[in-house]
Length: 498
Image (tube, rainbow, N blue to C red; front, side, top):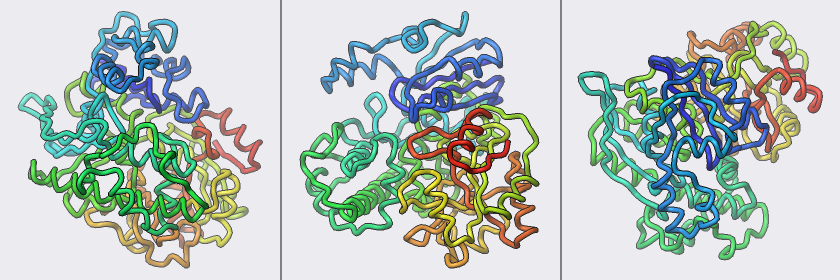
């Protein structure tokens, strides 16, 4: 059975293709349109999805009628006027035509699609599923009990929920906007800023915006931001807001985890939704759960795979995150190694693009983590703020020698949690202000050539890691195809090998 899953209409649109449980393709619309965080479909990504044939079913990641009820409640009448209530109508509005032939259609709840993207790609037969994001149709936090029945069909029981306007994600986005960043896009920058700040706004923010000390219930709807109530005086003030907000998020997460553990006693956690991209907060998860799974694309684009998973009904054959646009060449290990030894910095665009916001070796800018000026050089290339941290990619068998991994995080193949570096003076390019690094571990069976490159680098230098950041500049999507790679090389004067 061939199924295409779609998520679009808000931000970070995605398309996934599965057949008989195999994931054939999963990609981001922004990589094709070249519009960062693009919420709309385009002909390029649809053409790539249809290379696998006409689908039998097209699955959409949320319930249009339920979403319309929330738009009506919140007075978003302009958005409501443009709302369509069928998958055909939504797709035709985006593309001008229906490209999927005689395919049947299905719609699913926003949070259930998040839950399925996580659970049906996980290694677990049963789990507690937590979904946290800004907003679905109405839900902002849900807790589920998930399992497979005797036929192998996934079963979901919602145990608890928090609805709009109470929202962990909306509050974090409101402060992202307050400090001058793009809400629903640059929350990860606010997370990075928090290491430079003091939590001096914590009590003020909690007292003003949360009801009776309950950090999951708001006094005031912050959907449209909080700029009228606060003035960010300078850069340090922005850092202090960031630190205070990160601490509020972590306190909220502890409350959610306690609730989840009370409702379902599983040792297995599936964590999904856009808030699950906060790798600093994710370090806490192992205090409650022995086994943790976060699908590498837990946000809205990943829900295209969740909708397809729900239409399929059973466990998906998850292998890894290399699911997008393919540049079908042999991974250029020798050339990359030579350039790293010569200049310390090199780009690579090879194999299938990563599904998710983080490059994992196939669309990466790589550098020597030992260089004292490497961080500054890479931030200059990527046109990012100087405070921004970089992540290490390391041979999995060496991670515990160099990093204190959080409890129950023995590996982190998708850069989903921070760990304290044991010898930060040896690797200044990949250690943040607070002494942590967002680690990516690479197992021996990794399909990407990044494994072979790391082995060659280790043999040549004795260093088992490289700096790894996405091959893009701030405000632009990650490089997708060979033309993008060539343009990056020409514009930013960094060798990019394909």
